[in-house]
Length: 555
Image 1 (cartoon, rainbow, N blue to C red):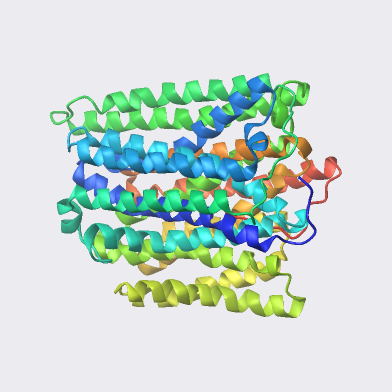
Image 2: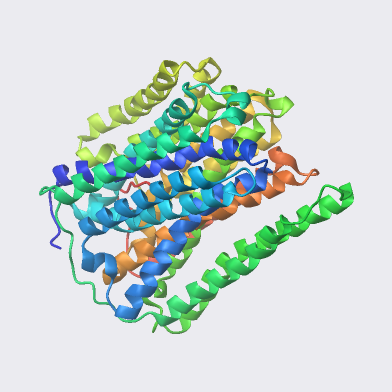
């Protein structure tokens, strides 16, 4: 497809609608996790399996696409065209919505949770295809140098979806935006049916809008690629190892533990935790093996012959995992006495502000897509994040939530503004600074309690907001014809959102650790992202690539 020097705003405005769906549905999980925990009587780890099914589908979907493409020596998404691929993804998500309705109507408290997970999985398979196509498509709708800014614009819309998602979901399910634990326990599953009927209709309308629009180009280009059998078998092996690690964990929940002693229960939690760590190392170890092997011979590795992509896959895995994990476990944290012993109705504003924090950063990161002058840009770097913060507050106030405890969170927003001025849109500098700020924020959260600690953990959303663009852009730099394949591999690593949150949840289930200290896992995650920024800069320089340009993106 011929590269454009000017942005196709008409096509872009339609494209970013799919970004909204990803955020809306993913944030809605923040309501479903506590609901499932109450309704199906789950522990913290089991409740995180909602995220496991949802984000695991990204991995499986992208893997299936790659395997089929590799066997045909032709990239499926490229041969279908980006436009058609997104339509197919939307229709697949429609099937997932139908599956959810069926699960609701046929499930039970004893066995219904597995049906719920399956429906989430099918829905997210559609998202996997959409993500694989949408990110490189956005980059092709204008000047490649500003392509990631267009993705960041989509990310801003994505984050708007994450901000209003919990509000809308709660309104549909409970008839109010402020729900309590009692309402969670008494929720009629018919309300869930209504919700996913509406979601399914939205997927159908989006598919029709996208497919029938003449403003959106087809997005075809040469899809012929050399076979990448080594990469295929490496990823299949990782998948087998993941299954092998999770089977013992799942099987351990089939046994009656009511008569076990405290010591036996603790040993059981340790057993489950070690298998989850095994799953984590299966991914990191498998990709590390690919990294070493591809250095010896690039033949058969496809896009995995590029070290920046392999390290970027680990970075995306960790980034999505930590972004989701902070939020998924936040509700349980806020129930602790030292954090205010909050009820579900009290927690909702904090969850909304976390997702809203992502919106604040991404709106700010999207400013360059409109090509403002330097003076106007500097003004907007101050004004836009404050406006976005005001929007988050306003939406929640309209939803009748008490946002007064979060007014002083504006000081964290000012830290974000200063960071944006310091990074100057340079991806390496941006990723490194924001990663280190995240490490500091998590440490403050760990060594304090109360409002200061809460603000620190929430600011993780602020600093996460701009990381995806940097990781995505740095990982795909220099891949050439392998860019779409590399994009699929990066989307595959959204799997991190399904593994790291359960690991943190299992840490929280160990009495000697608890939910607060389980946040040490976020420190480790952000440290890797800072290290990735440092290493990838050297890798790209050796390849003759200077990628310290304006960059912005989102997931």
